[in-house]
Image (cartoon, rainbow, N blue to C red; front, side, top):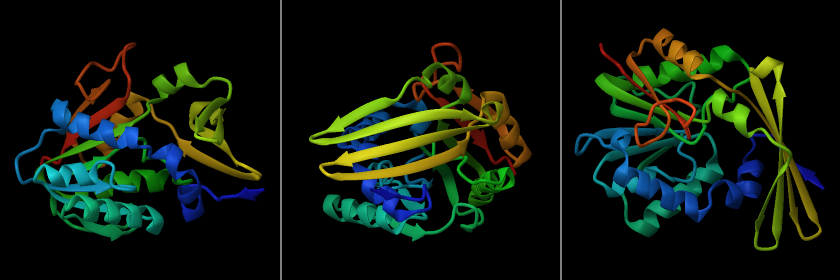
Length: 249
């Protein structure tokens, strides 16, 4: 049995990649970019995909004519993103960097942070610092789109262990609420033949009210919250927590 060390451990992304980033997820990203009013930007806009992973959104954004930069801490995921860009003939700039420390003052018209890629630092101040990075990277008038599983949605979905199979591989995910709903822990067990790999992720979870306050404290204005990429309200029918905000000055 082997154990990986969470989101900062490249072994985690390598071992669990196929479950986290299925081809279905890539297809979903393509469809969202074609249909979502929240993901329609000015032609030729400079887009930063922060925590881009293997290019799920980065590549299709570039194919739509945006000037795209993908930033991630994981060399393994960036390698996959570069390969996908090469295979599809798309021009993307990739940068390996910590989301707290990436610097490109005023360099982008849009900053994206997708698929619950926010809240993983142990110190809450570091998560707030990531929001400030997003703000600093935007040009005046630029837009942030931040997508995650909101606390209200997770409260409906934290259930007994979830079992997922891909071919002969089997993964079991067990979620545990921590600290009066401040954080969530996911314990993962992956079985591949005789090999068993375990991993644990712990991250902060946010309600719409909490995330709005954090965005405003980071300097953002015009903060809006939606319950999905179709622009629906964040209510009992919400599927995601999607925050859109603007760097006004």
